[in-house]
Image 1 (cartoon, rainbow, N blue to C red):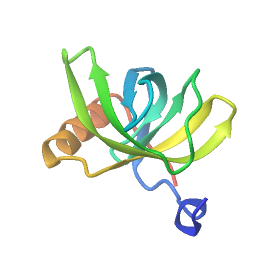
Image 2: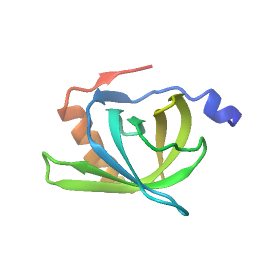
Image 3: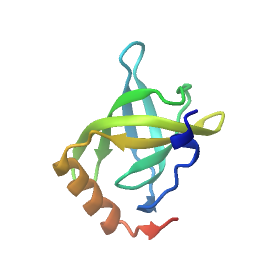
Image 4: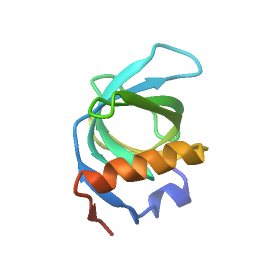
Length: 113
């Protein structure tokens, strides 16, 4: 784990929500995870398939209420339990960040420090 990842602190408001998050690897099978909480900066997810710390994945986040999905890149920051991981969204287009921020705000986000 990198020094940056170990000192990582959440600074975005988060919302507790269970959504499908489809993760695609550069090599290997795709993984469908489920969000436990979500922010503009990342998510805590539950995955029945292992992820590697520092692994970079392409993601598609389904927003069923809006009838759409958001695409971007995520990096695995840390593993909390055998099936729970912290992801940071990276290289995410501004329109996706805007839509994600609107979703988080509309669903009762609370600040987490």
